[in-house]
Length: 244
Image (cartoon, one colour):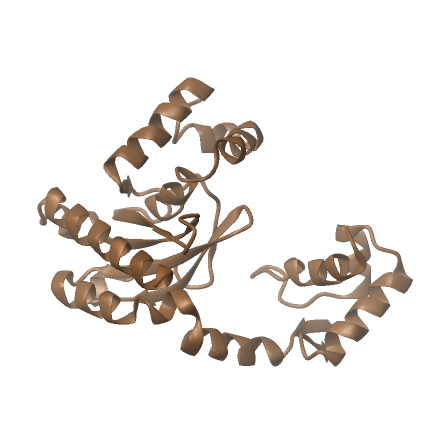
């Protein structure tokens, strides 16, 4: 890992239970020397990515600027906004646009058609690749060597959702690819069901996913073929726009 990667890794320490970090915590959790930790927070502070607080360092204002830029100009969001609005109006369900980031899936756009559809997770909340249709439909389209790596590194609880051995896991992934969508129920939110389809980049590499989600009772009120048709068609349109 080079110096820049080590410096940026400091930003991964922020979480709801850890809104402020300090030099001691950086050294303890990342194994950096105090000299390196001080240098990294100074450089991150100069870039506006960290701000000094009485108890340590918090996320800086540059992050808000970047978030605003992403909201307005991100290619995936630009290609999907009108489609998102149409699906939300047509179904009244929650709609998520999510993107693959390393071994994590993060929702970058979340719109709701009704209050009862509101999810407890959403924009900015990281998800592992095994839980929920949103993430699992992305997992299914990774390269074989990537799939094997994630399977080998998965916990027993994660494998419970997709098969505890490689053969069963492969069958689950193959079925998702054959169907072109994935369905999950109550995996991240009790009583909520989601149906997701994959979005690809201009080279047909998996980029992210689009998900319709809401209360299971409300989702089940729709014909499953109708919802799967809506979500897969939307994913194809977004993919075509990105490629074009």
